[in-house]
Length: 491
Image: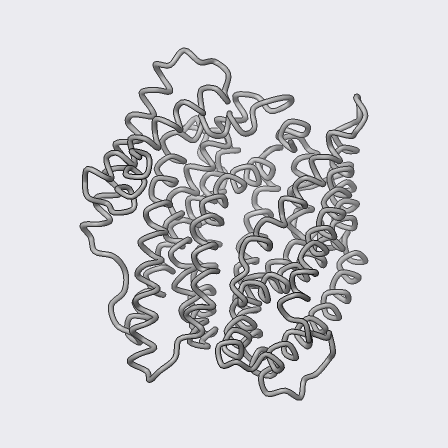
């Protein structure tokens, strides 16, 4: 919907930048940091049957988060002009003023999303996963309703402000819809500032390294935004559109598996050998599930990205040329897709071991490498190459993918030194890659030969063919997940 109304205009760039600036609250204090620090302690107390202490810890963490985030939201609103100038130096005049207004609107919504992540941590620890991951649908719906309800002829700048207000309302609804479920599973929970508890101090000790790690990752995102703001109009918005598609498999198959496995890994009991065996078993199973779904996602983004971007975004102000542009950026993202999703699960294993410092060290290294590579990729290209400067945005995502693979191998090697060999065998990986490449060949041929002209119709048939070939070839090659699906479809 944002693409339909704003495409790759100045307003779209301003919205993408303004959304990213306050969103650091959610990324710093939200799911990532809470998952690393709060869930292992809270889930451990639940596993030992100490519900009273678990609820006390949850209440204290919620109170501290609410206080801290309130201060940061107020600070962000007041410092909005400085933040926009610092993080998007390429914005000038009306584009800069719009970004400042949008940052001030969006900051309170980001604070509410942090509290929503606190709810998620509690519900996940109780094995309640659906509500927390379905709640963002309400947030998205609020933005869509706000845009659709705008009057005809409303300017793009005004539409961006309307979308921002819809985001704030949706953030509040996303938090509110989870509260009843939280009170149901943690009936003794009372938000109180209680630092005296040893378990609360344990959460705080683990939280700081996780917070720094998330902060380091945000540096990379802000550097990308800074460099993209210096590129021609539309680069920053196109990065945001590509991210929507790129984060779909990350969320569906990376974050979901990691979120489901973290409480289970945190509740592992026994001596060191028994705990290591439990971690290896859950880690290996999770890695196989992630790879089975993410490999075909990455191949599809690289080979069929234009078909996908056109189906999702190409309408209204968003043109066919825009879809090709986003495809180029998406293809760069596909390079590191598997590494980033599997890396999340390895980081969760460290968190389950109450080690938040090791992922921090590797995150610092990855971000530093990403910044260097991204700067080189976004430099002005020699005119003799005949490549438009806006394609520097694709170089930013490609550099992040390369750095992601290096971080993944560092996490894997270090964890294996502690718990033993992990991962799936090469034969399994080769089979799913062969199935994905065969599916890409079939999907690519369909995209060229089929008579459909509407982007959605074409994508629906191409994706169906792609999926059928992937599961069919995977089943023939002996991939168990594919065989299960084929058997179910066969009756």
